[in-house]
Length: 300
Image (tube, rainbow, N blue to C red; front, top):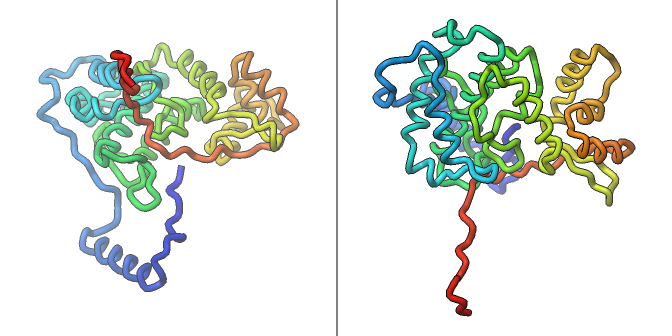
């Protein structure tokens, strides 16, 4: 996902020039315009590091803050210790720093997925409260924040690249990465773990195909609308399909049908003759809000 252009804002040429000059000066002073580097709170880390990867704190974060496929950021902001402890932990533990804990590609892939999702929460809290993690003008979630992971500073894009690499380019990983918007796949309520990863990837793809934010049919204009990432990266999805099915000449429809459960497969089949279109990106923050209280007094 890319940040929308701000060129349409009514600032005029002189205002634009001033901003460019100001930005250039700031870059020179700072010694470069790289991502903003955030630091873990190492004081929160448990004293003795276990011999096996420990995702207990991450499990607590998910269990206590994921509600109805959304995130209770208000609660998370007030109860940050488990998230901060997990982030401190992954800053010094990972496939490079502690390779014996990540012997299989599935264990490494699960590690990167969990890191990505934890970092998203941390980066959102850096801006919270906010209506969106994708402002028209402002930091780019994928590239403008960096955090130490496995011993080196990484952006979300860096982590995504490693997740895909260690999964042998299994594009279903993209359905497991929650990018903090209502128009993205939701945050799963349990950590990803190596032994269970094949099942979790299969379920994530099925859930995505059944999600109207990812795939839906527009019978009025006779279009099959899909998540922006499916269109912009369809070559990757098709390569994955052709590789795993040992075939050639596939289309994105073949991919969607293969990922879908039987019910969603029927819906996609019924729209095979439709043109493909993109679902407008819903950039609103994936924030859970408590339902309005019901007046039990019966008063008007």
